[in-house]
Length: 472
Image (cartoon, rainbow, N blue to C red):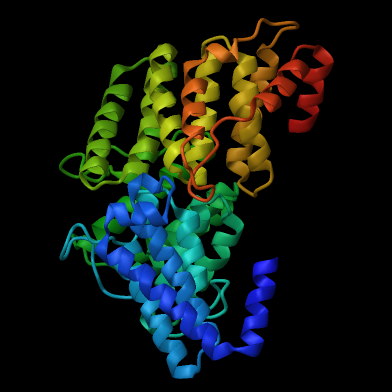
C-alpha cells in the first residue's frame, strides 16, 4: 500500500523524473540478463530461481520497470519504452510472441513460445509479464507497439497460461478474443479452438468442447490432403476427441493411429493424454499391451523433454511414471518417484496443474499403501480445498471422489504415521531453510499444525462426517 501511494504521488509531482528512473532501472536489469553472470545475479537475487534460470526473473522485473516508465511517458516515448519491454520478453522469456521467430529456426537455445510453461511451469509469471505489457495492464488490450498480426497470438497465449493456472473461465474469455480477431488464418483459429476445448473440459463443459471440435474438424476437411497443416490438425483433433471421451468416462478414441510411422507425435500434452487414457484400462483388461505401449510413449516423451530442457514437462511425465507402478500394484516403488517430484516442485516451483496432479497422485499411492489419513490430510484435502476455490470442475470432482474414498477407508483411533521419522518431510524441512522466493516456489505439504488438526478430526466418526459434509 505504501509503495502504491509513493508511486501515485511521484506521478503527480515529477512524472518525467519517474519515467527516467524506471527506464534506468529497466536498462540495468536488462544488462543483467544479457551478461547472464551467475555470481552477479546471485548477489542481486539471493533466491533459488525457477530451475536455475535467473534471466526470466530479471527479465520480468525489467519489463515491469519499462512499463512503469511508459505509464508517465509521452506518446512516442511510451511506444518506444513498450517496444524495449517487448524485446526483453522476446529475448529472455519467450521468442516468437511479437515476431515470426520459430522454434525450429535459428538458435535452439533462444527461448520460444511455450518455454515458460514446458521448461519452468511459470505460467503465472508469463501471465504477469503479458499483463504488464498490455496497454491496459490487465491483458485485455495488446501492447500499443504490438503489430495487428500478433494480436491473436497475444490473447491466445494469455488464455493458455490461465488454463494452466486452473482459471479456465477466464482463459475462455481470452481465447474467444483471440478467435474473433479479424483476418486470422483457419489453421490459427483451429489452434485457438483446440485450447478452448481444453479450457472447457477443465470446466466440465463437454457440449461446448464438442462444438469447438466440430468446427476444428470442419477446418481440417478444407485443408489439402497430405499437407503438413492437415496432418498436424488431424492429430490434434483426435487427441482432443480422446480427451472429451475420457471426461465422459466412456471408451476413449484410440490414439494409436495418431503417430504415423512411430511415436514421434506423442510428446508433451499429447503424451500425457495418451498415458492418462491407457493407464486406467490395464487393471480392467489385464492386457500387457495396454501398459507396454503407454510405457514406450512415456519414455519417448520424457527423453524429448530432457533433450529440449522441458524440465517442468518432464516432472508431469514423472507423475505418470508413478501411475505405472500403481497400475502394476507396486505403490512402494511409486513413492520415491513422487518424492523426487515433490522436492523439485517445492524448490523450483511449477504450474497449478502439475501441483494438483502431484497431490492427487500422492494421495492415491498412500491410499494403496493403507495410509488413508495421511493421504487425506497431506494431499487430497488440500487439493480439494484449492480446487474448490477455482472453477476447474472436472479436477475438483476427481479430488472430491478421492477424498470420499479415503474417508470411507478410515477407522476410529487409527494408528498414525510418525511424521518426525518421515524422510520426505525431513527433506522438505531442509529445503525450507534455503532462500526460496514465494512467487516461484510451492509449499508441497501443509504445516504440521494443520496436519495435526486434520488428523485429530479424522480419529472419530463425527469428525469424518464433518469432512464429508464439507466435500459433498
